[in-house]
Structure formats: structure tokens, C-alpha cells
Image (tube, rainbow, N blue to C red; front, side):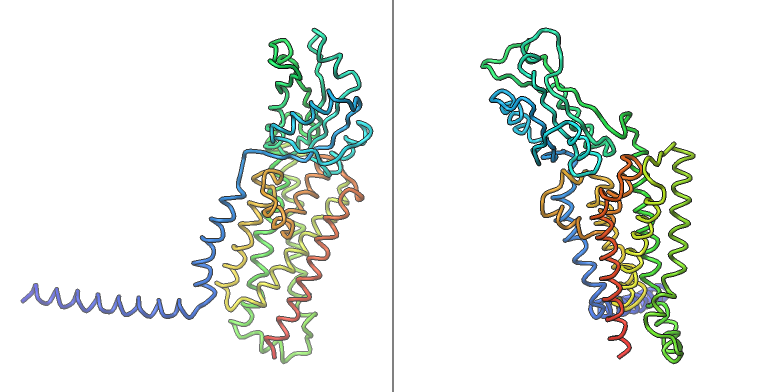
Length: 377
């Protein structure tokens, strides 16, 4: 009897558990956003990141200054391209132009072939036959390009050991010691701002709606743009505080320099803060609840970390992944911060990325206002 009672109790408990499971599955099926996230996130991220995450650096865009411009120098350039490590992006006239292009972030490196390249090649003094000027702010990319220092170029067949000993000088600019902190801290600034500001603002409107405060706000004279602005202002101050803390800690612990203008750096940070706040508010007006808002924010955060150049070289990604990365604010922000902090880039070098952040903020705010009015109607 006692054992039968235990079995009946266990059976009743199991039926109750199964009933709750069925109810939860029905609720999950009705919650289209959660169901879509469960299915779409693994699928999209597996396909996307499986193709884009690549530490094998290939086809790095370089500028070429061919001061010799004959068959010998052109063959050297073609053989270097055949290694698939670099790809000629443009031809320039002078070494100074090439250095300026690297500093402005237009190319990742510049190959300079001197006028006496043939003389250097056939002499026995082991003089380098060419110079590769590399943007050392990206340590992964710089390490890959350093492998070209002993490039086995030989115009004759078969190659001779003496000629194979010739090398290419690789000069790393802006981070010659290849310190990882100088590469990661500017990127971490973008990650932290994206993570906090986008998620905080993503639940701002949803939270008011779930607590019943939105109806009270509608009954007041507060207009929709005023409500949005009131939601943004506190987080602007929070974002700027985070910027100051990260830069000070980076300076104190990692000796992070700011080669460029601190004022320009703060302006770029402010534009990025606005871009993240606009994105967060847009999510907040579209999400059905706080959980949905958080899911949408994470769905954007992961591509921002993996495709922006923070962890993996932008130049190593396939073309379609680069196009996708271009619509993410963090891609532009990392270019801005590394350009100012490490390369000393000026406003003319950064205007395009700054304009994108400004337009991104304006676009997301317009869409957020439209979505908010639609929900009120």
C-alpha cells in the first residue's frame, strides 16, 4: 500500500510537470520573437562567423611605390601578391604619400620598391631589396606581414641560395613592440560602450510600458521627442564617464598613449554614444518586452564584437562580411579610436567614419520616433 501511494504521487507529479511543459511550449510557440531567436541565432551565427572568423590573414590592401618600374620590380610585386598575403590597392608616387595613406588608415601597409632594387638584389652585402611599411596598431595583421621579411623572391630558375637570402625590411608603425594592450584597449572601449548603452536603452521604453508608466506619460504634456531626449540624456553622461574611466585606466595600467587630439577623440566617443543610444531606443520601441529587448541587443552585440576588427583582422574577412561590418557602428568607432590614439589621425582622415556615426544616430532616432507613435496609435 505504501509503495502504491508513492507511485500514485509520483505519477501525479509527473503529469503536473508535463502539463507545465506543454503550457510553456505553447507559450514559446506564441512568442514569435523568442522562437525566432532560438532558431535564428545559432543558424545565422554559425554560417556567418564560420566563414568570417579567420586568423589567416589574406589579401591585405597595400599601396605600392614602385620607384624602379621595370620588369624586375613588377615581377617582385606580382610574386608578393601571389603569396596571397597582400593585394595591391593602389599605386602612389612617393614614399611619403605611402606613409600618409597608412597613417590615414586608407591602406594597412605600403610596399616601397627602391630605384636600385636590382643592384641590391645581386650585391652580396645583404641589403634589403624593398621596404614594407605596416600599420602596427593591428597586432594580428602586423604579425602576418612580418612573415614577408624573408620572402623567397628570385627571377631566375632554379633559385640560388644566395638570392633566397635576400629579404624585405618590415617597419611597424605606431606599435613597433606589438603590445597587445595598445591593440585591445581602444577596441574594449567600443565593446563596453556598446554592451552597456545599447542594453540599458533597449529596455527603457519597454520597462515603462510593462510598469504601466507609459500611459501616465502619455497623459502629461510631454511630447514624444521630449520623452526620447529625456531618456537619452542620463546615458550620455554615463557613457562619457565610462570613456574617461577606461582611458585613465588604460593610461595608468597599460601606458596607453593618445597620440592624436584628445578633443577629437572625445567627439568621436560622443558620436558613438549617440549611435548606440539611438540603436537602443529603436530596439526598445520594437521589442514586445524586456526579455525580447535584451535578446535583440545581444543579437547585435555579438556581430559587433566579432566583425568590427576588435578580435579578428578586418582585412582577413570575406568581402560580404566586410560589407556587413560596415553597417555596424563599432567597426567605424574602432577605426576612429585606433586612428586617433595610435596613429595621430586628424579630422580629414576620420571624417567618413564620423559622418557614418552621425547619420546612423539620426536614422535610428527617426525610426524610433515612428515606431513609438505607431504603438501609441
